[in-house]
Length: 441
Image 1 (tube, rainbow, N blue to C red):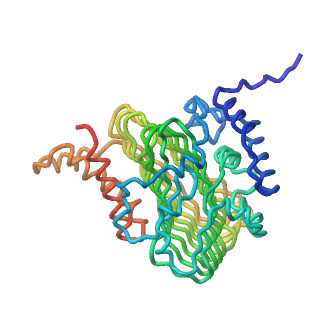
Image 2 (cartoon, rainbow, N blue to C red; image 1 turned 90 degrees about the vertical axis):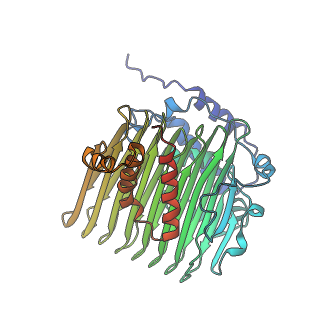
Image 3 (cartoon, rainbow, N blue to C red; image 1 turned 180 degrees about the horizontal axis):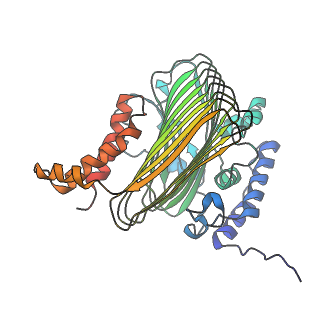
């Protein structure tokens, strides 16, 4: 008899089913409730991914996520009276938007600095406001199936923000989205955001993800960038050392538009950041760079997918990883060039530096090319610090740890140079230097 084996559910998957079944209906629109059910059905059918799922072969979420923490809830978010005082971007002049445990806290934000041409609303308020365009826009960047993070977030996210930037708006002051997780007990938080950038607009966005305690956090942000618009985006992932962090940014780039995005990941016990970009019109450009800094037993995963769906677009991916102790880093970069996407220029590079014999790096750059008039390349290297410059520095009286730090900063500098704003870049470099200063000798 030929019988299919039934998949055994983990405790975490069973707990997620109970949480979804126990949700209190909040009167959200029918279309959103239907999408929420569909997302959970996808999650329940596939289960949490393990190493047999190709996209998760290096990050076994099923093994790492042994439990599913209960949702933090709006009441706990509203009980937080202040944001953390060690904001690494606090010295920058910026318009700050604060979200606590997945819920906007405009009373803790600094919305007075928002310039004309930009509006911010809570997602919950927006979907209840009978905005017909929101139904069309929400989910557009994701497509039919955004994977595990999209399914988990789509099933459980209760709130987030909707940011609209009007056409031809030029915003010089950075807009800082500060995601704060406050876990007095093990909880989960899920945040859903939608960012609409009008044609010809220009904006600088900063994300920081911070928190205290043990928690599980997911964040899903969709960004629709109009024709000729430019977005500079920086993300800092500095979650609690006891946290599990999953985030996904899905982007659709209009004709002649540009996205420059940089991610610095140094927090969480387990973290996976996904970037999915689809070119919607010709002559679009993407520069995606980042740095992973991990120590101890941290597991940091950067996964990127770039869909060259139209001709004459350019994409660049450059990631640097520095791993110490028994840390593990992952880079997965996939470029898809569709048959009609001629004149595509797509390149990706992953370089890793291992500061310990126990550290491990898994890198999988990937090209799928179905057009013939293209320029595409990828590369991956993993190694230790070069002994020659290290000897040179030590011969001039520089202690070993300081000499290693100088070489590491020089190593990640190439990725940091992609950040356009000098003050933001300087803040990120200080964060990197602080991480290095915390290394054991």
